[in-house]
Image 1 (cartoon, rainbow, N blue to C red):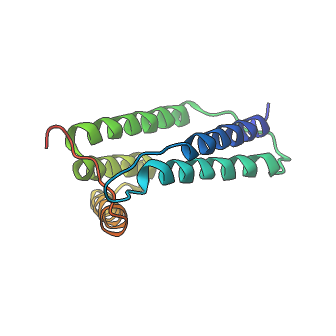
Image 2 (tube, rainbow, N blue to C red; image 1 turned 180 degrees about the horizontal axis):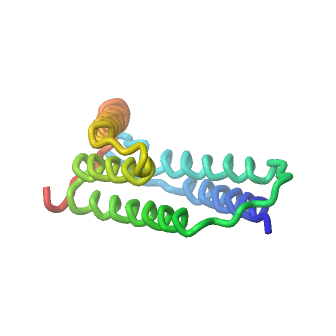
Length: 148
């Protein structure tokens, strides 16, 4: 059974509802931090675009079943994202993003293409670029952990 159309419709509905809810946010910050309203709207817009892509995609081939290793990799990725959220709370943005980016790279790369050096470079680059964009360019506050 092809689930692209129902999934696309659900993504459009969730994204649209998220945009409507985010438009009602009225948090005032002392430095006009764009985060409380802008970032949820951007994320929900991406959901709507992905949903529309699934709705209008022409599919002539039946979808293949997901194998056991793919399920394990997907569950591992979901666990890493939960771990990243906990890391943001405990250790703050910089430490959690360095470790989280490296761990996500390690899972995505697979056994054949893994490189400790490449993963470390990706982690430093992602952390640095996100810091520059959000903290320096936008003036947003990045999470500080309760431990550091």
